[in-house]
Amino acid sequence: MDPKSPETPDTGKHAKPDKPAAAAPKASRAGALSSGLALILSIIALLGTAYTGYTYHIQRGLIRLDTFTRLDKLEAESETYAKADTEHHEQLNLINETQETLKTALDKLNKDLGKGRADWMLAETEQLLRIANNRLQLARDVRLAIAALRAADRQLQQLADPAYLPVRKLLAEEINNLEAVERVDVPGWSLRLANIAARVDRLPILPGGTQVAAAPAPAPDAGDDGDTVSTAREMWNDLIGLVSIRRSEEIRKPLLLPEQHYFLRENLRLMLYGAQIALLQSDTATFETNLKTARQWITQHYDSNAVMVQEIVTDLDEMLKARLSARLPDISRSLELLRRISAQKAAP
Image (cartoon, rainbow, N blue to C red; front, side, top):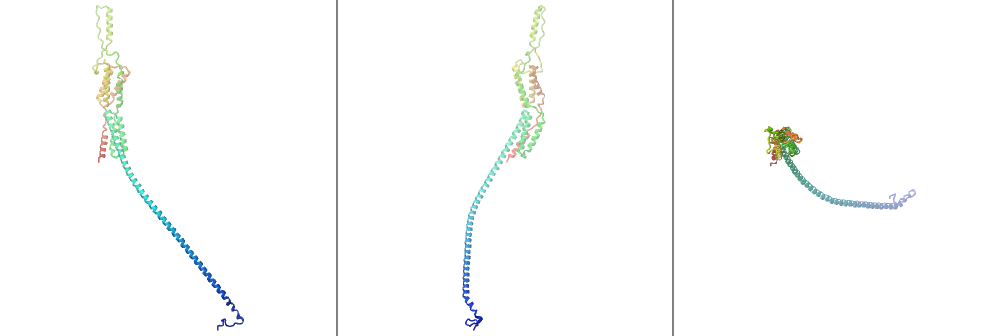
């Protein structure tokens, strides 16, 4: 038998072991309470975990839902942007095509304008060269011919076409040749001749008109008385004093008689106009012949003491002394070369 069994009587000091047996139910209840509390805590923990998991999943679902929503929105916006980008690319391509078209049209316009401007400048240059040749050949106007050649050279300089450099070289040579020529003021002389012709009507005729030489007075008869002889002699002297004849085989006579003043003036005026035309046509022989004839007529039939007559004779002498017959250089080579080069460039 077990000495610690309850059925064994215990005496004396071993009577105390009965107290822990009484506390056993209390300890059992405490254990049950602890187990229940642990169970409750476990349930609470489980519920908390479940709630946490539920909350997590809910939030995750919301997040995913929000993410999906945002993704859908982004996809929609992306499609919108892609569509807009496509439209922008189409518009940009259209703009580029339009720019290319405009650039092509502008280039063509500039080319046409440049070609038209070049043609116009060449035509103007040719016209200037023709003017220079005409003024030099017809009017011997060296000054205006030089000015026209220089203007033509400036036109070619602005054109800046290397093909016309030989023309500019010829122009420089022709200008130098003209500057070396002794200049005659053809326009000025032409105006002076016209002015002299206009003043012919105001030239004073020699005083007394045409005069004849006095014949020797006849001797009076011896039978006449002194008074009669004296009176007759005085009358004869008065009569022969009215007329004086001056003869010179060296002076060229006008076509009409000198006493016919109207025809004399008209012949003199025609002679001056003929000299003017000969001057403009560079007809040196006719020019000098008409000037000499006009000068002779003026000195023969008009009062050389009058100031107007002296001025006209001085002008005619000055023209006769000038070198009108100076040989003018040829300036037609530049014009011919310009036309030849232009024809070569225009050929296909």
